[in-house]
Length: 552
Image 1 (cartoon, rainbow, N blue to C red):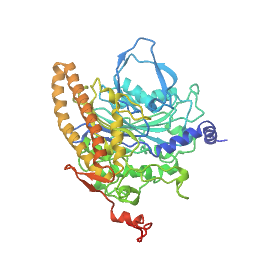
Image 2: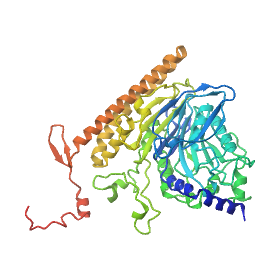
Image 3: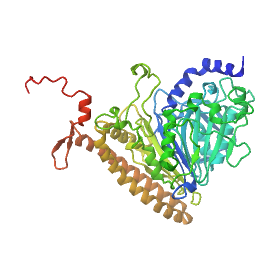
């Protein structure tokens, strides 16, 4: 029996259910973007992430510290699910601790540390034969160790690659966008298959990393994006020693063929045109580089492109909020969007789908209702660490959130942003303020989204104007009094969070009152009927069940 078939059978026996769940989930997973420092308006490097699922939304700051000789660090599975009661934290072992760890910001997928190292995430699944239940490391655990132990993107990749190879990678295929103030990298990793053990003498992971050119932008949306690897270019590529050997053993690549990482390690149907994923790749690249006239139905897009104009944090926020407005793929403008043009459509169960559509899904927007949080992170190489990195953080789905600036020197956030569960409404949790507004808006979307967008603009335009001034002022103060600079950015972030949260709870109440019982209440105290558009009334057969002779 070939190596490939052994792996295949073992994978089916040991992990098929887990893999199938991951693969189905990956089609509905996250979107992440990258921008080099010469591709941005302010010289920052940028990465973004929409955490599209039930992930831990709580923003918690984990202090760095020095450790005694012989100290160990715990390794967990289910770390990203700690607001899901039925997925308890699972400790699988301990590894040697380093002498000093750095402060990092923990959420479902940890995203920033005190040295302005930033991370975004997107699952890509990979072949089922890659799954390895014996592997200790999950992607969020690797992110923790990277943020605790690294100051640069290259260091982070080295930390994660070496730990995954030594202790085994137990997750599905994953991609991480990693930025320091100088460089942006895309790191992609997959497991070594179900037969791997820690005493096998073989690497416990397959991984590759590609540097995004300084003047270009990129996106990953649940498909592996790294294709060609230049094995002679260590300035722009990093990889595990087994990256070609394993693919050859499995029959996914052979000598004489061009080696493409994504073609080797993704199923053929994912490498081909895959609208649930490739459409988002097209949309992000097309919005940043429309002159390329990329087609929306291509199987593969360039890993990175030069944007037509330099991009800003606000641009990436806008893309995070995208639902294909102005294209044929905007569900809000179809019958599915209903009379109030709502782009929020829930996932039908398989037994509910019409015959022949069992493997079909709604058009997959970039902004999606089940998003736990999203961010756009910026890092500047020429500024002191505490003020040289800012992460724009938004709870719940991007379309209806407010992005609040969080400097990497921040030492505290309001308790309501660091706590809260998801299975019960909780007015002491900031997440629920945004989730309530998002859900209520679906009742009369094209009316309410105008009110929501007005409030977003008020806050974000102010923050976007204030943050550069505060950043520069705090940088000057840092040279004389570092603790004062830290206090400045901490106070600003805390006040911004508290203000936005209070306003969003109030906005939710206002929307309930303004759009109740099918009416729109005016400021003067009168009500206007929202009604329905004529096309929709015709489509649903308005009047078909009414008898003209019935008494009025």
